[in-house]
Structures are given as structure tokens and as C-alpha cells.
Length: 150
Image 1 (cartoon, helix red, strand yellow):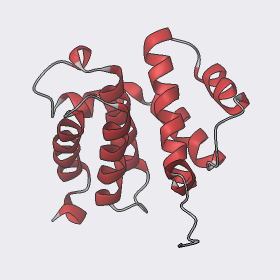
Image 2 (cartoon, rainbow, N blue to C red):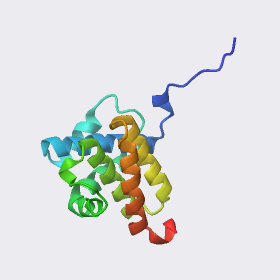
Image 3 (cartoon, rainbow, N blue to C red):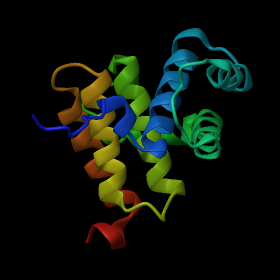
């Protein structure tokens, strides 16, 4: 018999990926409740089962997205075939994270940003939501990171 231990999928997530998941949770909560960003961050950080995550990256993403949501929404809206209000809260949250990272985390290659967003959409979104997210972020990346995309 083989003694190779199989790690549960949750443990194999990188701390940055887990930070994105928690940021998604925070944006989702903000979108549905309108709670203050500091309150949301404190509540998420106080949870016991958050797993391994990069606290600084999480805080920067959550605070950045919520502070700059109007700018991010305007960028996303240009690449939609419907209004922002018609997006599911998950699609909305994933797109906000993706566009924020495209704008403010130039050290992360645009393909990694898009891949991470697609993975979030696959995990938390509807059946084909990841395809929509991929298409919108491809267009946004071409606009935001013109040189890198070419």
C-alpha cells in the first residue's frame, strides 16, 4: 500500500489565494449590507477558521477595492454587456479584485491576476460565471496593461 499522504485541497491554497478569497467575502458582505470597510475587515480577521492567509495583502486588497470602488466600477462597466447592477454579487466582487490588482499590483503578471480571478469565480460563482469574468478581465487588462498584454 502506498503511504503517500494526500493533502486536502484547502491546505494547498497559497496564502495570497486565501487572501483573495477573504477579500471576496468582504466585498460580498459590503455589497449586500453596506457595512463600513473597517468593520468588515475586523470581523473577517476575528473569524477562527480563516486558514493561512497574507494579512497585509488581504487588508490592502479589501481596503483598496472598497476605497476605490467607483473608479473600479467605471473600468469594469466599459467592458460589460449589461449593467453593473445585473452582475451577481460574486461576479461583481471577483471583477473588483481583478481590476484592482491589474491597476495596483504591477508586480503580479496580468495572466496570474486573471487566472486567480477565474479560480475564484469557478469556486464561488455560477456554472459559467468564470467565462464571463475571464472575458471582462481580458478586455480590462488590454486597456490597463497595454504593453504587458502585447
